[in-house]
Length: 101
Image: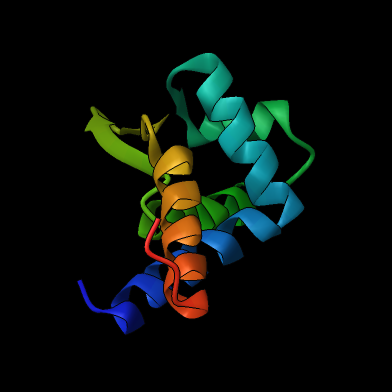
């Protein structure tokens, strides 16, 4: 993976996590294991449309996965995604500073 692609991926994840509502959604999903959009709307003071939008951003960043069960879309936090993001940031910092650790 070239540096530009790694930077793009890291920025996508960072932007997804920077929004307080998305961060709360991710934390809520991770704590519960798996939740539908409807269940998230019931737990957080935001509209269904807002939750759906934020879930798409989290999914596009690789932080949650979605599966369909009947008419429901169920969201689950991706195991190890935050740790991988931390490693990617460290690698980018080393590359920028010329380090090889």
